[in-house]
Amino acid sequence: MMLKQAVAYYHELLADAGMATASQQMLDERLESSKLIFGGRRLSPYLRPHFVTESDWAFIHKTCETIFGCLQKVKEAAIEDEAVLHELGLTEIEKDLVRIDPGYSHVSPTSRLDSFLTHDAYSYVELNGESPAGIAFSDSASEIFKSLPVMERFLERYTIRTLEGSSKLLDALITCYTEFCGGRMEHKPVIAIVDLRDLPTIKEFELFRDYFEANGYRALICSPDELEFDGTRLRCDDVAIDIVYKRLLVNEYLPIIDEQPALLDACRAQAVCMVNSFRGKLVHKKAIFAVLTNEKYQHLFTGPELAAIAKHIPWTRKIRHEKTLVRTGSGSDGVSGGKTEEVDLVEWTRANPQKLVLKPNDDYGGHGIYIGWNASPSEWDDAIELALKNGDYLVQERVRTAKETFPMITDDAGNWEMVEQLVDLDPLLFLGKVGSAFTRLSSNELANVTAGGGMVPTFIISEK
Image (tube, rainbow, N blue to C red):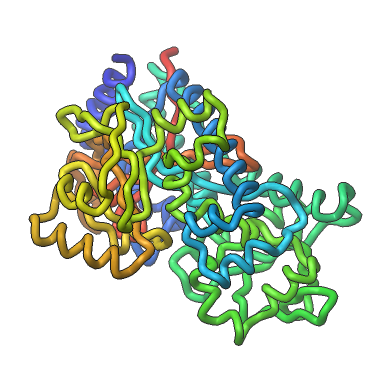
């Protein structure tokens, strides 16, 4: 009740035209000066942050960290068991990459769990365990939204707590590097932020570079073709690199890996500490949920972990011709209940589009996703055949999604209107612990910035 009242009050404040205009103008000015631009457009075209209550935030903390403990167990099993690697869908070259010892134990030092929080459910839809974007963008957005005129008035009645992730990312880098060095860091490491050239995320790289250097660490932004490895040190422009903050996705590196092998060679030689390592691919594959929810792998987890998986992870399988257990029974939204029965997976998928999604195991930006309840019978059949032919697709149950109305800027002149948005809450984890979060908003069912959505900071709210 308090949350609804707070949102209503915030929107009531925006009904004052002068307040709304002043807030919108400040937002636009500071988005530009703070580099919160993604591909030439506003990253936050909204006049309100996403509010989460203190009690919900505590619950999110506990749940995320329980689930991430399960992911670490899957990593350990995958290193030992070829069958788990196969279930995750790793290719032969990816298997070779994950066998490279990164010099530290954590599978994914920086990660993001994409989730939906409703009044009666909390569900994850996927994990970004390889190279999550948005940490620095979120920090900058928090500072901007906290200073808007409308927020200053709002704080006369409510208390908010902002979140911050850049310091926690830096701590994760240094923690991994210290372990990589055998427990003792003899000098302040040089950090290289590595990704392809000319990406829309370059503004975030600049924010990180500036943050690292402000905290006493030399930092540079470079692409794989600028790296050189002499058998001892990895360098860029003759600068020796100690830590690679890898924003480069494995899928984007593989096509150029033979022509630009310096990063790979340095990792093989344990000449550089790369975070996240290639082993992040083990949990970045969307099929990680197919391992968590499959009866074949229940032995990996404790009773409380299995309960958390059943409650918060959507039932997921690799789409293929096999018999498997599915959850049966459903509510009005098509979400399955807790009982199970054995079915032919392909035929069951064909018969139940109203509660299923087909998605590629290893892609991002909303590419290749087929939403069953939005498809005609022939479109769904075609999607199933495409997925089977591809050989690396997942079928996943529908989860309860969250929607809220946000004041959204609709044009370059700064006009805005109230628009219902899909609300994707994205907790950020550092070394398996929740440290921050941001929220992605979208007018369609793919809440993804690359696919055209936007983001706002997540604020933790309480009454004065």
